[in-house]
Image 1 (cartoon, rainbow, N blue to C red):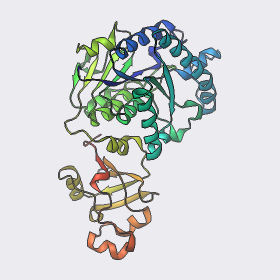
Image 2: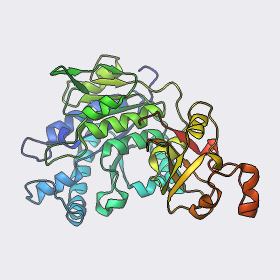
Image 3: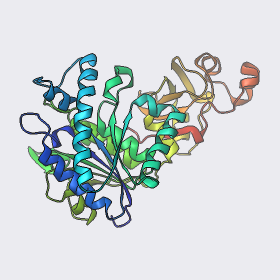
Image 4: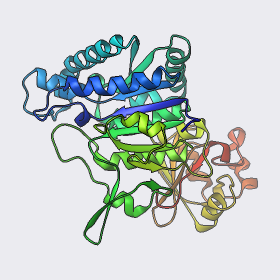
Length: 370
């Protein structure tokens, strides 16, 4: 932890509310005070905060989080002001300025907008010495561009700015496995297994979204990018300082041995696939075991409507997603070269010839089952 200088802290909705669902200023004050304490020790901190929709819903007298997209958009426009004004008030008392950054998935799946977001956040951190407060832009949210939960957004932001640590603050002590009828809190996870993913559930109340399922997804994204992740209880006294002191707080997820680059993190997790390619066992072995590019000879089937440069998922014959990459050919051309050897492709596609369907530099391989 002594090597951590840049960290992303995500605060979940339920960590900010009273039992009746209103924004709890005492909780906000506590967490702001802890963030400010680390910031003053020359740490670069990005805050990813939920709570805009529920803050607006409470202000407008709604009993629970709205369900329809138009209602959520409208309520978020009210709640975003309340949430940011509350943060601004408490941070200013600490002598710290904040800046608001609203993101959609659409902002991160396009490479130019992705880099613009990175440059903005880094400029706030490094030049203006401002703490960016990031939230999903619920006001323009539609089903096709929603992250689903700020846990995933926080992991993508951590990769975006090459953070040293991701901390997910929630209302539980960490990640628990239910074994033999007992609930066991895990101190450390070195490998996120299929069993862990199956045990992680969605949220069950009307306040937040995501639950532990989205936190495991966020930890997978983060650790694959070489960034350790911690899930901890936001109400633990001095929780952030205890984490930075190396105390066993919550659940620590270790980064993978072979971390992917920031660019590959974008390919693997920030962009939505436009299609699928099913490959045979020989191609699967070449990708997983030999670090090769994907060639047409190993393709069995193509699905979707994509063009050159689009992201596509790669599936094995059992329908497991084993990777994602930026493809060199459109759907129509891929269908023409299925099963063909590289030397034969040029005669089929002409001037648009590439020896690889997906080059390994534009390819992210997931662990089997991810």
